[in-house]
Image 1: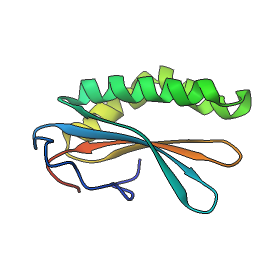
Image 2 (image 1 turned 120 degrees about the vertical axis):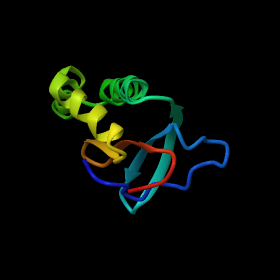
Image 3 (image 1 turned 90 degrees about the vertical axis):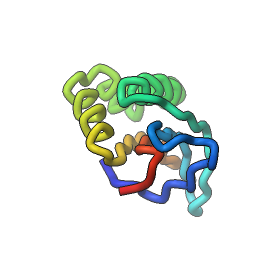
Image 4 (image 1 turned 135 degrees about the vertical axis):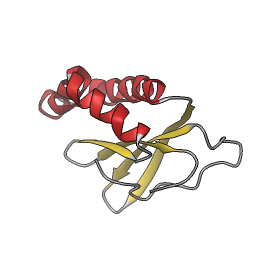
Length: 114
């Protein structure tokens, strides 16, 4: 978990009671490719979105690199920590990687950054 590592500003249309989720790929040479973003109304819905995106990334990775993502997808204790972190108003960050790319999935309260 990393607190608000380079998050983009929230769109003005996102209400402060929501959570803002983002998926991005960081490639060599510091290139960032924004993959997806989503507004969720609760930590439980954030976790659902994070799981779907983690599955998308994991499905694209070769076996050795996919293993941490597969483990995260079934780690109920980490899922509970994710929900608790968000409910406490903090940012949650999951990073998956392969040889050349880091995939960062993050969620934070939309009302600001901590």
